[in-house]
Image (tube, rainbow, N blue to C red; front, side, top):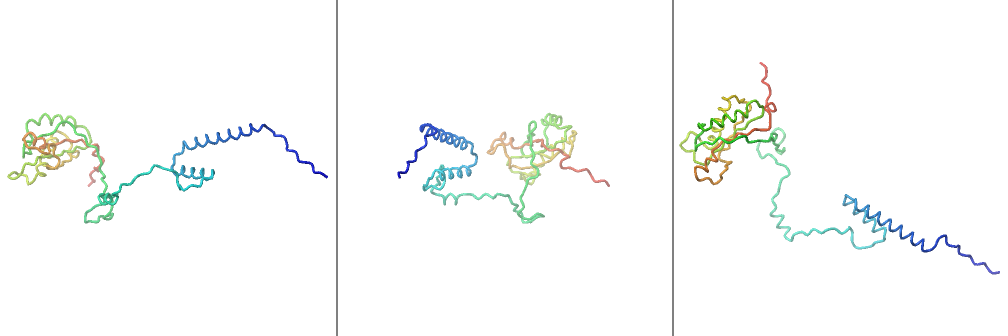
Amino acid sequence: MAIAKKQRPAPSCPLWLATYGDLVTNMLVFFVLLVSMSEIKKDDRFVEFMQALREAFGYVGGMETVPYEQVFQPKNVDLMQLLMVPVRPFDWSEAPDPGVRGKHHNVTNIRREEKFEIGGKFRFPELVATLQPEHDALIAEYVEKLRGHRTQIELRGHCSRVPVAGTDFPDHFALSVARARAVADVLIQHGVEAERIVVVGVGANEPIAVEAYSPAERQENDRVEVLQVNRRVEDFTSPSPSP
């Protein structure tokens, strides 16, 4: 008895339509991948994504990671490391006294203030620490600007490198401090509060004219600067204890 041959069922749709649907689906997946890769913000996540994508498509290559821009190292790496100046991440105190918190405690500047120069400068003759008659107008200008405020004032004294031998000053620091102190005294006499004033003498270590040879050039360095500090007096003073 002959066995009846099984009949193939009729296709539910034309064959070209099935192929067209597969192509459209693949194209949709391709554009989804493009959109997802365009918004990746982390490199490690991108590498993992590309690895998974290669494995899904059956890629068996020799690369272990996604290609990236190669950074070429110089040939004289040893010489570069030898000439590199080591930079310490922390500034440690080099004083022999270990202090309360230990020798290697970080050194921190607790007074980081802004300073503003107001008006001109008090210029002095060489090796002289007394105010001159031409300073009267400058003093009146400063007193008018400084009176009535509570911000701190820094008087920074300077001098040129003219030798101080034969004068009343043992060194340039004493001369610069005497000049700043002279300006402080006259400001206090005109009503500026003494607790607002800080006297600083830097000697000849902060010259305006580094190579000063003529008297006019040296006078640029013989000066007292009046700086207004962005800090109130009440920030670092306390009331006097009661008896």
